[in-house]
Amino acid sequence: MSAEKSGKLKVDKNILRNAMTGDEAALSVMFKQFVGEGENVLEAHYMGRDGIMGFGQKSFGCVTDNKLAALKIGWFGQMIYQDGYLEKLETGAIFQPSILGLYIISIFVVAGTLGIGILLLPFISRLYYRLNKSGLVATINVGFPIYIFANRSKLVLVNRLWRRAHAVKMQLQK
Image (cartoon, rainbow, N blue to C red):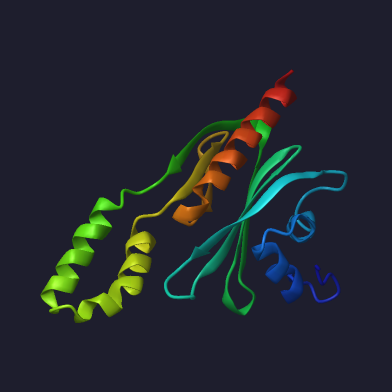
């Protein structure tokens, strides 16, 4: 998983592919290189791709027994990892953009191009959600945000992850 000899963080392609299908073992392996020894991954999910038409970063979210974590994996070895201790968790917000704007834009494009614009609908949808983000933003301690992007279809997983993080925080405070 991590290539300590080369000094680079890496995710094996097979593990990444399995993690994107929801494989719990693969998700755990991905986050284990970042969390402390003895720390357990309680819940982790693939949240979708933040980008347009197959380009962009793959987004993952995780709750351990101490942290809320986000991992984005992009092209050419890009990795962005954020975490924060659950005991310092202050607030969170889950964003789900309205689809009304998407419908209005789509109608105008299709009508304005005399129906040919129907071929552009997948691109318009991706662009709309690229500009109107969905997912979870949690603040840790003095306003440090952890942003877990999620496709609109995976917002149920975001909500589940948020509830789990809050439950673990309550256990830590006892």
